[in-house]
Length: 346
Image: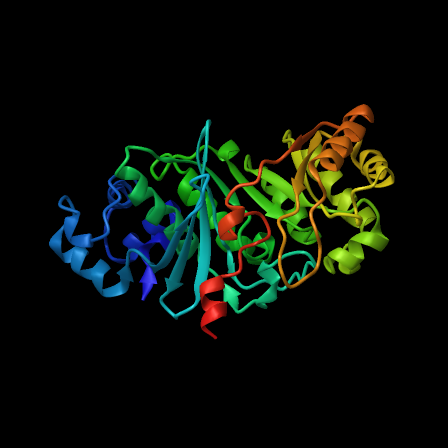
C-alpha cells in the first residue's frame, strides 16, 4: 500500500480534490503528519470520518519498520529499516553542536560502482519513493520528540545516487522543506551527486535553494575514471562546464567532496591539481578521511597527510574543511552504508 508521505502538499491537494474535498484539508493533513507526527489516520480528529475511511483504504502512513539500531561511541546512530517489499535500507543520525543531522538513503543498492564505496556492493534494486525517503526522517523525528529535539539538517548522501532518482528526491525535499511540513530550511538540506550531468543542468534551471555537493575524489580523468566509472560518461570537462552553468544561474555555493585515499589521491600534485580545477568558483572542498571497507583494499591517509593536503589547498586559494569521522565503529560513516544485516543473513 502506498504511503501518504509520498504526496507533497500540491499532490495532496490534487488527491483530495479527486475525493471532492476542499484544498485546505491538505494543510490539515500536513499538520497531523508533520507537526503532530501521528502514525494513525484515526488520530486526525478534525477530518471527516468518511475522508479518514478513504485515506485508510488507499494509504498507510509509516512505510518502514525498524530491523536494527546501533549506537556508536560518539552517539551517532545507524538504523536498518525494512520496507514493505522486504528490501532494507540504512539511515544515520548524527549529533552536532548546530543540531541533529540525518543522512538518508535514496535507492536500494547503487549502480555507480565507485571503487571505494561499500554502498555499491549491492547493485541497484530499485528507487525509493519520496515517501520512503520521508519515512526515514519521520521515524527518527518521532524518536527525537521524546527528548524534545528536532531534525535540523538533512543530507541525501546515503546509499544510492540521488540524481538517479531525481523526481522522488526533489519531491521529498519539497515535503520536508514546506512551511506546512517539517519546515527544514532549504539551506539545511544537501543533495549529493557523483556527477549526473543532465540532472545537474535540470537542477540548475529549477533555481532550488538546496545545497548541492559533488562527489569528486580525483582532479583528473585518468584517476577519477579508475575510482568512479561515471567519469566515462561525464568526464571532468563536461562536469565542470555543467557546474559553472549551475553557479552562473544560482547564487549558491558548491561543495566538492574529496575522500582521501592513502597513496592514491593524497599527494601534493593532487592537491594542486584540485585547486587549479576549482579556483575562482563559489565553492569549497570538504576533505573526508577515508572510512575503510574490507572488500576494496583502500586505506585512509594519516592525520598529518590530511592536514598537509588541507594546507596546500588553502595556500593555493581554495577554501577547505576537514570532516570529522562519525560512527566509524558501527560502519555508519561516509561510504560505509551497505544494509549489512541483510548481507550477513545471506
